[in-house]
Image 1: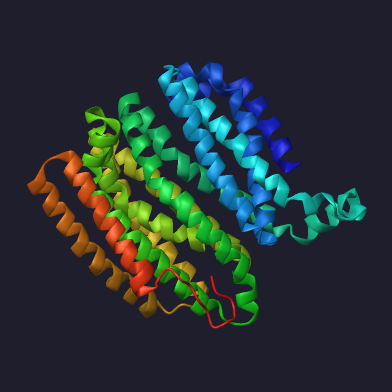
Image 2: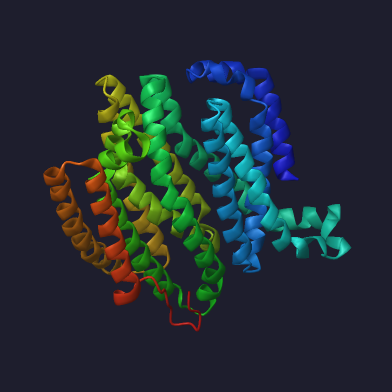
Length: 399
């Protein structure tokens, strides 16, 4: 119901002010596609709601299938659009198709909802539940709105400040960097969320959080560092020579994306431990950092300077958030700093080797293959040699 109401509100707002918003973003050519936004908002709301229910009943196969089908549907539609030269319409159709495909497997996991007793659908019962859990919408809604603003503000501001070409380069880099956040980070977050409440009750949350953190850092640091080393060559091989600048943006944004990768997995602790107020403060800080970084870049008339400042300041702000999240989970600062130092040393050595290889080998294809081989090697060792991707706690749960 909430998703439906918000879709109507947003649709009405776009009907009245959509052209003005697009004009401010230097994207007036998208006016004919605004009707898709409220529909996609409704589908996104359904996916979020049904995903939460699937996590509640631990139907992880449904969430996994939803993500896989979303990715396949979106990629398939967008590639098809590219083949027939559909342009922006093809990209939008891909987004829409991915959401449609993502809803289907979650409906199966949600079937028990529709079998609830009749009182669960009564107005009096819904009002009672809304009163009991009013803290969540009253505080978390604002935090989510600010979070969405922070997530989408960079691309919008790049378009407004530096034009469509730069915004396109940045958007492609930003989207690729978000892939591990969505595929790995959200998956870990969902499983962690399903166990965190019981871990609080049996006082095993610190050991559980430490294990999850160790696995996330061991996965993320080598991936992001090696990815930064080969990013320009990778973009040239995959997307063509015209997209090399996107690879350079990727390099300077890595600190921000890495700590975003870590913090997203632990953000569920905000709901588990009831710390919504502090979370809102961090979300506001991120929006301020993004705005200041891009405005400074505009002052120097350099999109690369803007992205570099964003990568540094954004990384620092999200590192502070990670420290806070682990602190409220009961993980001592010296423990997570030791993990970060150990895994960081491994990642830096591997990244330096790949970087040296890229300067010697020159050929973009060879450099890309070398980087991918290094990633497979480090993750293979982590998976089978070091066993850091198996996350345990003192409770009987094994993730």
